[in-house]
Length: 207
Image (cartoon, rainbow, N blue to C red; front, side, top):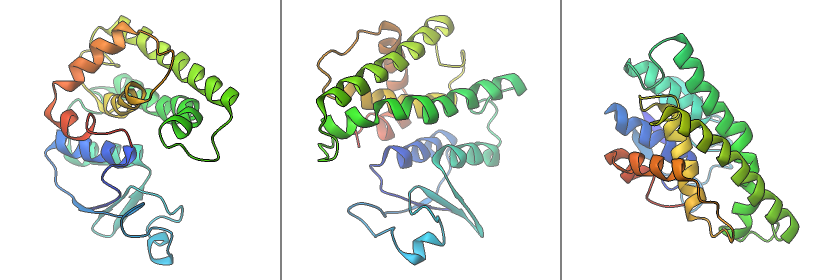
């Protein structure tokens, strides 16, 4: 298998972390900002969106990081990473979709302003609003962790923890002026940090 992507990208690191948890190998082909260009006709044959990551498994090509992670777990036959029964699987995918559809849009403006310092993201009111929405979403996560007492879907570490762990790391490293103290998230972060693959691919940057 080949994995196309910038190794520091949060979405590429999702896949790298998943591969490590599964003890699977894929050749990383660095591309994206600072590496080989992706806005080319050749790369668009792999992904018409000109985005990373992209996984190539023989003749099969797949893009969208969460879909890639799910594919890898199903390919490996891992017993619990995607859930151990139908309802557990649904919970794992629910939280993965929540991360992509609810959490990501909340933090985008604040992150682009405070970390990337992008010239298109300089409106103080919009930064404040985004930061507040970001932390409101994380309060939902904190409340769920108060119920489970372990990982987001219960006692087992799953794919949902990979995608949410990376988002949590991004929040912890973004210089917010009024960061909330979320005790269950803090304990969760410590649990995740005990995993060697998390140390290698989650708590290793903010990009």
